Length: 119
Image 1 (cartoon, rainbow, N blue to C red):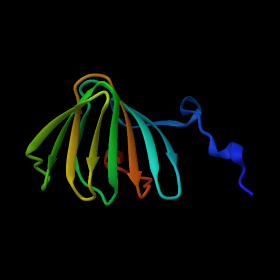
Image 2 (tube, one colour):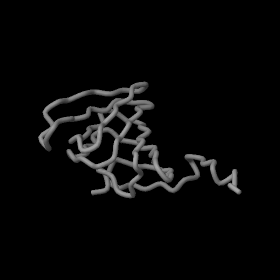
Image 3 (tube, helix red, strand yellow):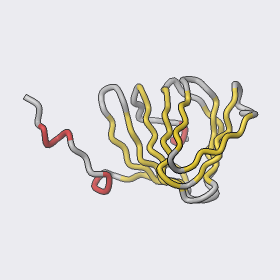
Image 4 (cartoon, rainbow, N blue to C red):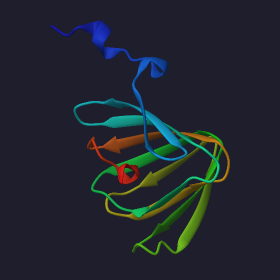
């Protein structure tokens, strides 16, 4: 039998880590999906990277510039702001720059202990 209470999580009660300067995150990791609540401070730059996971980034508030491309050079820039969603297919090179304080919900499938911000 499933312990129903173990299914519920409260963001403010989850462990918070800071895998890089100007970024904090809290995560819920399931069997086939992971969601991270990420806070980006102005000036944060995430270097171009790629991974096997499909990633859906829901910008809750703020504004972030993504650099997206077929190679590490990431030639295309796309600004995403509160209320918008970006879908990144597996293996697509991408990086980001926080233009202001930004809150993002990042969904990853499959889940992964390490993402592009884990260095």
